[in-house]
Length: 277
Length: 142
Image (cartoon, rainbow over all chains, first blue to last red):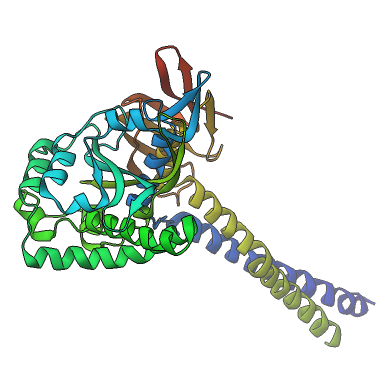
């Protein structure tokens, strides 16, 4: 009788034992999970972003709504419609896209920089507005250009000195021209695409001229010039701007340019942000 | 003996099944939730977003209020100095990286804060006869 009872409960005892073993194993796994989360796992987030591009596009968007540039009708700002009279006041230099190869134009654009309440800190922001409907293959396109600066918080950094140094180092020797023409060729393709969208084969030729002007803008100096201006360790953002010569934001954002007679021209606003930090 | 083998087999099988389900169904979801939380609440991400929101508020031609809450579970210490956002993350979990980030923005106000242990940021642009004005504030949302 006793033997029979023992025989019946033996299976049950062993099953309970197996379940307990299983639970113990699950406990070990849970402990391991807790250990991984609390002791081993350490999450680091890395973001990859082209800050110059983002900053340039954001600032261009702000300028399209800026009351001292945009047309105001019935007290309301017409975003994206820039008035010629306001552009004349805003710009340090007005000329042609081809004027970017003239040292006096570039120096005037840089040295007459402005603080208008907009602009990234520790940087200079080159703003160019191009009237695409005024383009002629020989003369280029009407262009308004200025430089904006934001607050400076880097010790020992003087925008004034740096900008003056850059404009003094703007050279016109054959080596520099070769580099600039390279930039011209690269951007002329992009400009040609813009021009084709604007107005057929003539537009493509005109767009090429615009692109060429922009190409000049992004290849005005080389590393050696920057080093002469007191920057020995060049931040990545600055390096990218001067070394790449391929600045997507240099294609600009579309805008309308309103003349005093009420006529509208298609244009582009191009912002280039050069940051130290 | 036969009953014993079956019971053992069932027990072991149940444990293996539980572990398999945990690692294939539950653990990836937990990990995904953690990664999602961190990818949207990391100091660099939030500072970058906040700086971008402050800048693009300048593009508005009418009054605008931007409210940005990265996550209710995470708090931040933040301040703006000379148009640079400085932000520190306060995580309650151990595996959270104690990180900080600085990001520039291009519109006023040049300075704001400091705001401590906040998770909701409010950016306001208003218009008056004198022109446009900007403000950044922050609060804790439960």
